[in-house]
Amino acid sequence: MLVRSLFAAALVLALQAAPALAFQCPKDWAKIDTALGKSPQLSADQLAEVKSLRAEGETQHKAGAHQDAVDALAKAMAILGIM
Image (tube, rainbow, N blue to C red; front, side, top):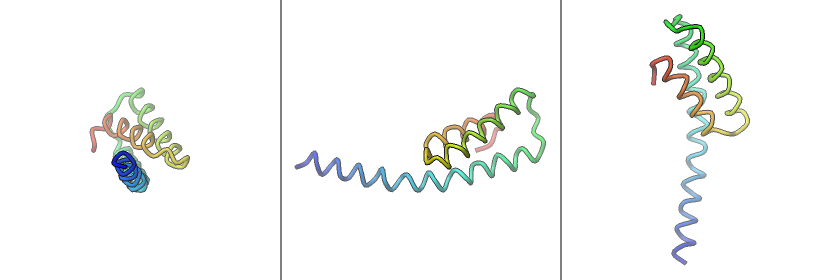
């Protein structure tokens, strides 16, 4: 009985977290877009990686893979030095 209760509680928490991640994705790629608009001092390779990660994040978000999207967008923001 205790195991079922713990499982149910974990399931509820997981389901509540998914929408929070979904709303975070567009905010993160907006931050990236704003930073890119300011012509950051990045190498050509870094700029290409940021753009690729940003596109990957949006694609993952639209596919419903929000944790993957958040991870990709976080890598892009780290390269840009924003959080």
